[in-house]
Length: 226
Image (cartoon, rainbow, N blue to C red; front, side, top):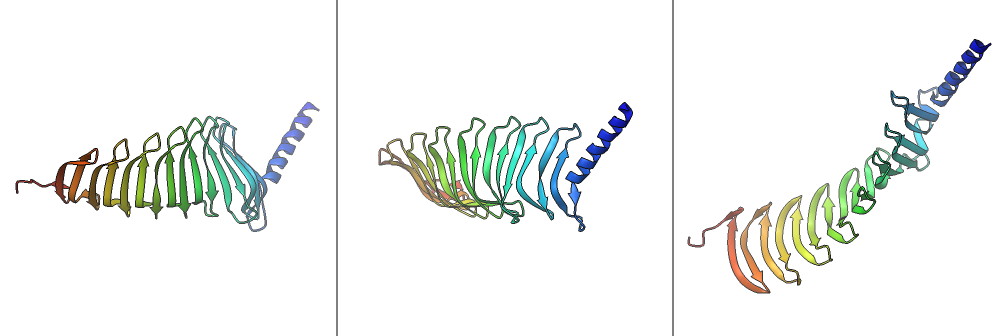
């Protein structure tokens, strides 16, 4: 009897697993699905509708902590995602397109839960406004990306909110005016870049008074005696 009961339990378990990870006539995943690591620890669990993930999917690290939680919008393939480190702490939150490329604004967190970055994506690339923060929430740096590369004016701030630097970028390279400020907000250094190389006159000031000037050509400091 015990042997018969054991066989029956085994058959029921197999039938349950088969019913859970089912496919339709076209071979598409359908209904509840799950998978495990070789250790037996759950790897993910969720539901498919004719091969399309729907509702909530939960993924796990092999140590049992969640690695990601994906909430899908109907049958669109779009989902909101939260991603976690191997201790279960939230590391990132944002939206994926149906092709699993990052889209719209993503928030990145430090290990202690403080916000590190607000980054805008389009089709998986950085595109649009970007902000980096100090641990206390003050803005450290702010600018924009285009096709994954820095573009336009980027401003760097001190940990008390004062401007430290303004730089201009084009296609990821320093291109245009570079300005640094002292603790009182006065210009301390001003010059220009061309394709990441210093170019032309650079002025160095103290308390608004010019101390010295340097001239560069393709990043090389020119000898003023020549």
